[in-house]
Length: 244
Image (cartoon, rainbow, N blue to C red; front, side):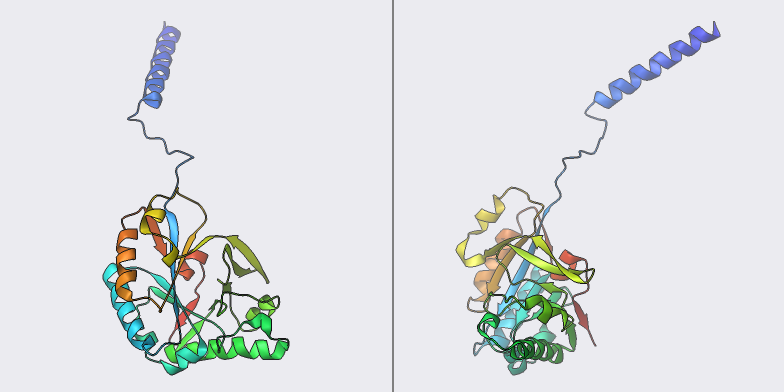
């Protein structure tokens, strides 16, 4: 009798569990669930007469939209516009370029290339009281010595490329795939209609374009299902140290 009672209870439990598991009310996390696509906004400050004003306007817009970002600036431009760094919040990372607007690949002397990278970083660090560890080639053209040049200057991440970025890990630079776009070539709808991706989306802007135009573009982009990140958040490293 007891065995029959136990068997009946066991059967009832199995039936109840079966109904619960197949019910839409029973929550089961899907292995195929896709997280939000990560978007990193990068801004290149060019050598223009209004660079300081442009940075001020950009900082105001980013604060209003509560957006993180990553800004790259030539050493010469940072030296000429030392106030630029003070405008931005801690949600903004800073990265260096070469000191002059020059292709490293066009320089034959390694020591001259090393000096360009070193002086570019030093100027950005001095202007913002930073220790920046991010780099982007001034013309988007890297050099075959780039990993040596960057590691000798304590730089941990390189965003010079059109389809990936590199992060210094375990004594070597490791490649990470990315989807890189120049914003002026695409409408916000292009990004809003993109399928979700595990590869980060990097969108490049520069100071040749009015902040008001960029602001409209970003307002539209914020309607999408994106996670906006700066370089530190993307890599999991502290790439802009302040007050050094």
